[in-house]
Length: 303
Image (cartoon, rainbow, N blue to C red):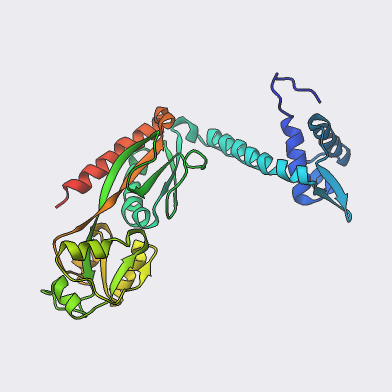
């Protein structure tokens, strides 16, 4: 098999034949799925092996199985076929006209703050398909499938476009059954109520207590990986939590939580929107950044 494009690429049909045969473990099964004869499928696999100069499939115990080289090659082939299929569906569905963005966001910020606002974005920009996934911790955009991410970090990675979405400001809150409404943080520490910690901001309580001139309790409290987990612990009366308004606002207004101070602990880290600089030329990215900037302005101007 020779390349007819001037590029060192095998025929797409041969790659599909390889992937289907390896997945089903049978030339017969592949021929039925692809609506080809068994001879045609075998010929396509042979052409591909000749082109690569390597054996990709072996017959083992009556079934076709990938060789070690074949298995490694298939990892890339499957990714490439999936990307081609997805791009084709985008064009057929009309999404390609407006574009598509794959964005990763922290779990709690995404579920509580961002996703409720995305209904407005979908109505304003129906031509853009926005796919959102959640992730705890940093994300390597140079090697990930995502186009952009909102990250909780002290500074965005170098050689990336970044925009600060919001700082992380934390206020002490607890369930009303633990303390009277007029209680303060000093009251909570005198009663030795447990302090609920966030894994991403373990420095928060020691720094905040020092800021308030309150002695650090000897007994440490439980730790939680997500802001929403800390919220549920506070609602359940398990102790005092340091949480942002976007997490606790609704529960405070409903009387399910009380705030023990109007002074916030401001984390040295913030939420940043980050993407590779070359992604900025994408019209959909430009539109989303402008929209996100509006959301940030509304959040900062809210009373």
